[in-house]
Amino acid sequence: MVVFIVVLTIAAFLSGFSIKEVVAFVESGISTVSEMAVLFIFSVTFFGVLSDTGMFDAIVDKLVKRTGNHLILVAIVTAVIAIFSHLDGATVTTVLVTIPTLLPLYRKLGIRPHLLVLITACGMGYEPSALG
Image (cartoon, rainbow, N blue to C red):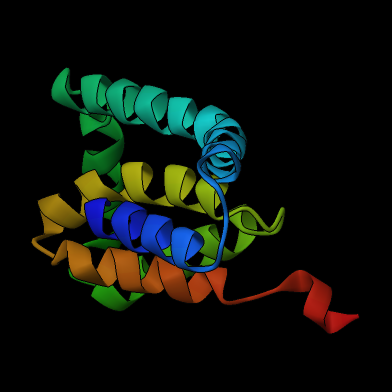
């Protein structure tokens, strides 16, 4: 984060912008992302508390019984959830729906969480508007 802030600030000054203009850029940027930041803070806290209290344990146990050792089935389900949750075009929705929901299942089955992130990112690569 620090690198982004420092590099962009230096670039703005080198481009000839005044301190007032740079401050206006910062205020505009903060106002643009503040709602999303609050959403992330809330969702991480919410899903963290739910996970710590064991809220997802029953669902994960049922999913583990159904999938068994079929890791490919888990990957396909992950892709389908990521694609459908990304139909609105928002990365935030996709990440907040897919990752907290499936991470306990991946942990229970011993699947590396990197695969969950990779499949979710691939699901976000699908762009419904590209179809016309």
